[in-house]
Length: 283
Image 1 (cartoon, rainbow, N blue to C red):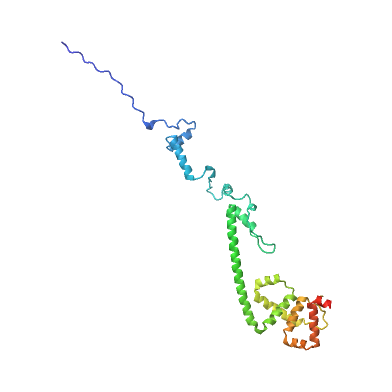
Image 2 (cartoon, one colour; image 1 turned 135 degrees about the horizontal axis):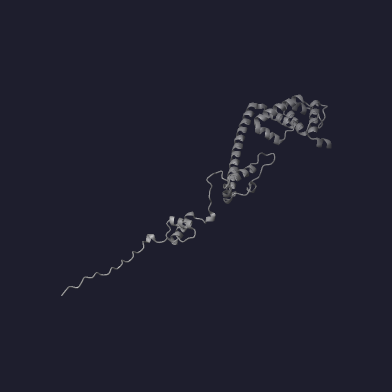
């Protein structure tokens, strides 16, 4: 009996390999905007969830909504800084800055810094709050310096006056009267005297006025027939009162006056008429 012929089993095709997950189509590949699709894929966002988480992290990092973010120009001279200053609170114009409590000096009282400061603050992009703070600090410091300078000036002036008093010695009262006489004769106001004293010092001013007063006393003696007051050759009440004090401090003259010396009495009578014209007119 012969053997049966051998037969081979039919070949069965191997199952197709499962597609590689790395080769799967990206979720953004179907976007109409191919550039956006490529951009998303380049950043490795493998799903909408990873994109959303990334954006959430960005918001936490920046801390504020996008509308509150500022893009600062790299160039300090870039005109875009003007918009940045505006968003940071700078007023629209220098005149729009407000400074509460500031009292500008009068026309004759010196330099008013406020107009210039407003201009400078606006140029530097300061907000209202920043400008107010800096200006307040500046004015406080200025006031402190002015007080320190005034205190120092007063201390120096008092020291100089003390030295002058020692120098004049027994002639101090006489020189003070002479300075008052010159002040009255020259019609120097209190404001003018203060201004002069601020320049040369109180002691030096007294020296100048005392010298002038002594010269006036020597060359402008009142004669018995001199007019009692007013007019080109008369005396003002202030000058006459100063002369009364000056003459009565003279021991010899005071003795002659109290003893009834005719010339001395006439001299003083005319001084009193000039010093107190209203009383003289009423008699």
